[in-house]
Image: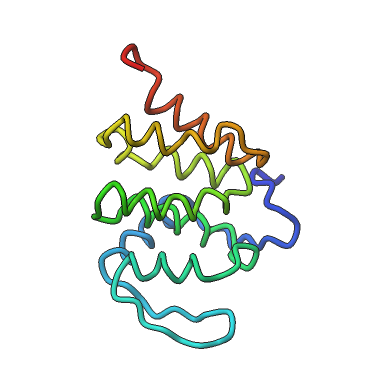
Length: 151
């Protein structure tokens, strides 16, 4: 039985969410050596560099777990709201199934503390998207972080 309906050709390694979260935390703190699709090895000092490497690779070549770890890294980065939104702008179009989308949204605790006006303005671009998982992303975020009396 398949719980995650990954796109055809999408590799799934079988890591569990807690394991992926641990990997992302370690990458965020320590960095790692990254092997690019062309075989070139590059050292990344921390999470921001690993995120830039993910951004440079065609999303179709990433496995399911790499996509989730990329999202966790965005959540773990210590950065300004503007920097995080820039990273998120590149990540949202990569969402290709409900599990990646919902894993990201459930762990994006920084959104609860973010300036709501800025975040809401940022989210507007995806409400009318033609891509189902971009719409799912914005609806899940809106329901999770904006569904209270003030909003």
